[in-house]
Image 1 (spheres, rainbow, N blue to C red):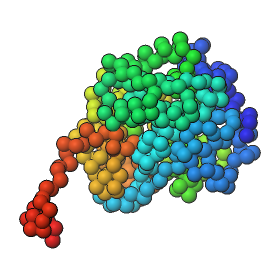
Image 2: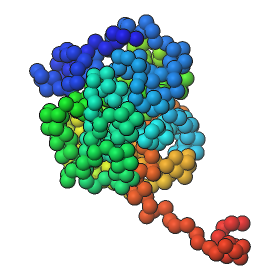
Image 3: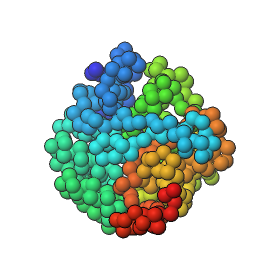
Image 4: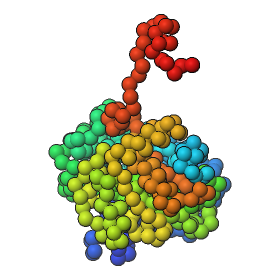
Length: 411
């Protein structure tokens, strides 16, 4: 379908722009987002057309900001929605689901979705080089999908990332640049580079298109629940974009007549060592104070989140909540999810499950609520966070007697 994108528009003043590689309003400096022609989309989109589409996020191509066909990340998305009966029983919930992006393709995090959209759009715009500022997962996804697309690639990361994520960049042979500083330092540098070099920076000049890929999590959730929006969702917050786009995606489905009115409550989850958005929300204000991150949840360690204000706004609109958990609670929650559902999540997943536990304890999520917890990355990427807390293997000789003496609980 052509003509579905009207252009870009400012989220603050509403000023219209062409669908170019720009991201900031020149009048009020507000962020730009994609402006869709929903009347045109409604003419071609139905539950049936979606269900007949590919088993990837591209089954929702009519709701994503590309003009032609998908060319990058063809297998990204459409991850399992797991009915977490064991974890639900532990927490006292009957209808708990895990949206499991630990198995996303190709790099085992939800960032595979947004990068598939960003690089497809960048190709349409004629870019040959892609780049990003990243806390790890985005860099992995950009490096992998740029390799598949045959594009030059530069990724910029903080110098203290987990080794698994650094390796997850280098294996694809992009140019990896470690910056001595935190993510906010990296992001500022990349904004300067993006202003000088003709590159597609997925979270700078391509950000309006890139961010839309997160809507696919909302679309898939509703479809997998039988075309219903959940009652409650728990979403980790880094920049805040994921939460805002899940909210946008659910409401788009209703606007297009695919689901009933959305009554979902959004719950944002942060790590205590980097919780500017949740802290502001709990204080009842819509502005946040930037912080210097200090948490094991490095994929969420953005001290000055670009979409923090909009995440607070969306959470209020949904009458939801926000909270944060300590590093110890993150580790405990990673272990709990693994030991109940067999899902090994990275530290961001521990944040999601940790806040979920708090919400249940505080009575904000009830036993029968259809609840979806978004687990966005694989634990193999952040093994350092839990390796000291899971024990060691039992060591024995290759003899039956050694087994029976060394493994006392075998019988």
